[in-house]
Image (cartoon, rainbow, N blue to C red; front, side):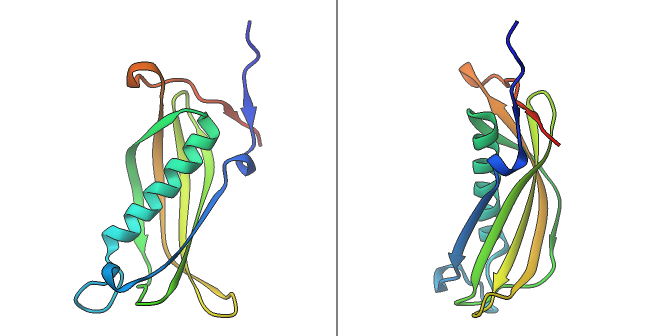
Length: 132
């Protein structure tokens, strides 16, 4: 019998940094919400791929909050952390910040992404357990 794989949340933690350029700005001078969702989804996918060691797909986004806007030339830092796993799914907590010059971070958005691991023929496959 194969020994069940166990991985720590630290093994899959992911951080992405992005500067808000003019092509990401809407008519009132703020970052398009959809662009932030795209970046957060990519981070969630990287977290899930690192943990599952296979391809993944987004099953759903739970409770996304946009607390504050981001503006032109802001530095955005998006952090993804695995918070729980099921048999084939992974719950990834994503937090986005505006990082001011000097390093102070202000939280602008949070969401929980449910990602599903895909094996052969895009059939959901079992993921490693999560250590505590």
